[in-house]
Amino acid sequence: MADTAKFTIGDKSVDLPVLKGTVGPDVVDIRKLYAQSDVFTFDPGYTSTASCESKITFIDGDEGILLHRGYPIEQLAEQSTFLEVCYLLLHGELPSATEYANFEHTITYHTMLHEQFDRFFQGFRRDAHPMAIMVGAVGALSAFYHDSTNVEDPTQRLISSHRLIAKMPTIAARAYKYSLGQPFVHPRNDLSYAENFLRMCFSVPAEDWKPNPVLTRAMDRIFILHADHEQNASTSTVRNAGSSGANPFACIAAGIACLWGPAHGGANEECLNMLQEIGTVDKIPEFVKGVKSRDYRLMGFGHRVYKNYDPRAKVMQTTCHEVLKEVGRDDDPLLKVALELERIALSDEYFVSRKLYPNVDFYSGITLRALGFPSEMFTVLFAVARTVGWISQWKEMIDDPNYKISRPRQIYTGSAKRAFVPVSKRG
Ligand code: ACO
Image (cartoon, rainbow, N blue to C red; front, side, top):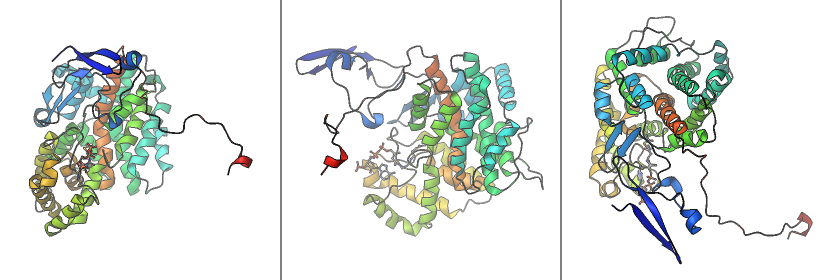
């Protein structure tokens, strides 16, 4: 393709540079467009706009490809561990054995929370949604770890990144335990990241908790599948918040708030609710009718970028089968509903013509429920996993000498300038 694109409006003509990524479509650089032509572009939801340059994650939505630092998600999910993927996302390369051991040690030794931090949880109602607790508690980290909030200092940036990856499972498990009225379980340094998290969620002082390798591996894989996903809504929120120089804990709290929405991270909770509402396979045709008449959406289907099968959904489907088998629920009626719903949707003109395929959330709800989590916790687990993606993208932005505060423009469609009328003279 050409190195420049010509833009003409009225009697003005502007040559715009065309940028090339390693892979993916070329990008027209419109940074000077307004200065040279007096017009803006209009792109609500950024469907045609790249907001940054990034080396972290690549998605080819038409082909259903997801790469982290060049490595396909399927290979990472199969052969790597979540902590290794964290290192990869943060640092750009897979670690050597020594680097991995050091990283694992660092994350493990940052998992505890300041003792006073635990008092925060008591301020919430027991029936608070755990995502509400996450937004508040993670934001509060900046009130405790002042020595890692200076965004100008690369060492502090790295320390806050480690703290966030390490402390997120501890906060998430506390949010869960608080809702149950059970005592908080402290992290243990001899356990893996996923094992530690499951133990903090499910062990009680009255009895021993034994790790199950199949379930631990499934948890780890679910974390890998959710670790990063390019410039999605919550990641863009983190970058936007960070572009003003806000500290990383505050930025991640902003990302959690965005993730909570049902069109984003809240979809797995909504998807499980939907499957439960459908209940049995014979109710599917009626349900699909409602989707087609636009009464509601088929949750766990469709994606802004994937116009093909979400590659994470395939891994999640396999993991779902493994977990259900392990916990003796391979005849779970919800799995039957999901499989049949998927089969119908993939052959139905309504979904096919709109390129609506299962996304990662379609099977994650059933899997997480089988692991023992209530649906309110699903988005929390997503937040735990996505923290590394958010913080890697935030770090990349701060390291970029060209980054600017995010400040979109608008088409103003309100009143033109008019004179103020005192209340006594208004009709
Ligand atoms: N069910 C039924 N129809 C759908 C669905 C769906 N899940 N998703 C999109 N469509 C239809 C729309 O009605 C629209 O049809 P039309 O062209 O006839 O008007 C068309 O497909 C395009 O939809 P948009 O809303 O323009 O697509 P967009 O890219 O903005 O939305 C989104 C993407 C929000 C993910 C959407 O597909 C959706 O709401 N899915 C359900 C929620 C979900 O599963 N979210 C998880 C996303 S993955 C993640 O966050 C990890």
